[in-house]
Length: 132
Length: 172
Image (cartoon, rainbow over the protein chains, first blue to last red):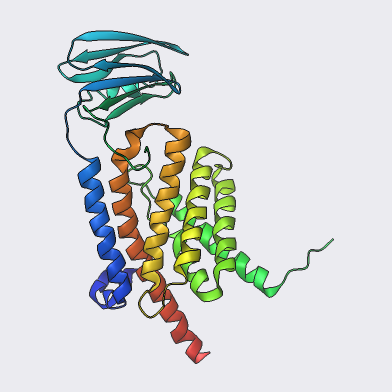
């Protein structure tokens, strides 16, 4: 292993033509994945899910608080200036609240104890290979 | 009562023990990003695949997943299911990739393909079972990049091990 770190060049010569082909194809695929999945499109709506059901979809173009009644209590989701966040949650760890504002399409915050999740979506739902 | 064991069983047990040890070592190493791990135990799987064939590799890999999770206390937990799904898909990929012509494709290719299959399995599991919405799509490029990086490194280490093995067996 140390040997490998010391002389990477000597070891790269072990690669054959097919290996390079696979590496290049993988790099292209990864760049493509970054481009398609990391678009910083501003979100237009927030989807709130309670358990496996869609609780509601709200426009981010408004200022309002939404109360969602989850299994362990009521969480408050605050929408303002094209962003959304958990502002209050009855859970112990408060991870969801600490996650702060979500502003880009595709971002999500999940409160597992209370089974509530937020997901920001753009004007059109982005294509995603796991979701077609 | 005594179970009759063959030399092959002993060899698989020995190699699986080695893979489990690497699995444990890796569990202790902190990961910079949740879930991104080098997968050094896969070096053993690859080595066994190229040295002793697919059946032995499948045994070693699955024994590693089961015994490793028992030792870490993850058995039947989500972590275990992720591990199992990753191992099964990467074995599937290896069973196909082993037929690639050896002249053009070294262990590095197999390693990369197995690593991609591994993260695909895990991400599918996460998507379908643990976090059933598209939020995790953000992580796909990171996992893919990590799979490529560690796939290459593990593949190179395997190549080196096989090469050393050949050198030693010359003198035996």
